[in-house]
Length: 285
Image 1 (cartoon, rainbow, N blue to C red):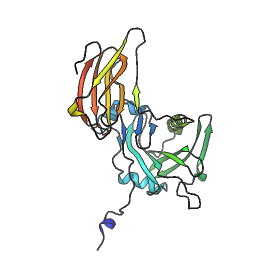
Image 2: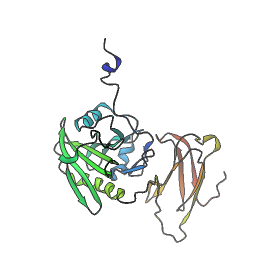
Image 3: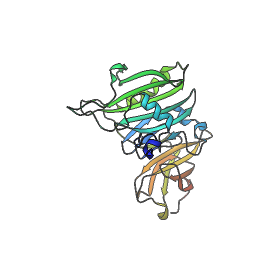
């Protein structure tokens, strides 16, 4: 009789690194456990990519399509974990996924990380990365590897993989996204899971945005997100977001004067509490 593992093809599979998230209005994927930000490009700002309830980026599981791609690219499920998978629309429609190694190669043992000797290498003043172009099941695969730390026996590699139509030729578009990450990781990378955008001059047009989460809504055990949306050039836009640690419940930020929607959510974008605030009116907590 076949075991349950055999029926499901394998008990082991690609795991997702916990505590990853994206925020509508921000171009970055964030993973708290890895203290890592990944720039995903301007397509993350397009409203059409956020019409679904879950948004364009998946941080909960790896479906069969992506598992097959990772196997095709020789990623061992014991050596690497998935940061995210997703589908985006913009200039092109494409799938994207990112993985990171669990641990470096060990001296005196067989290397378990990808062999990059067959990859193309690109290097400039911003840093360097490796890439390969292949095809898999009728799609073009753009495979990039960015050395976050490439010191011997301390290797830490981020891989970004784009799946596009087989006739895709605009490699420079993907390279621009990768190059932005290479530049961000150069030298003294600082993990900053937050955003503040001020669209007005410092001439009396600014004020403070204060908020306080009600006691009964405070998450005392897990990470949460505080997001503030306002009108910018006639459109609803993300102005502030902050990662909130367990028991965090208040804050104050400089923004343009006006009306704002404050949303307190889980990392999975489930709304726990929300309110509306005008910066020119006293807020009663």
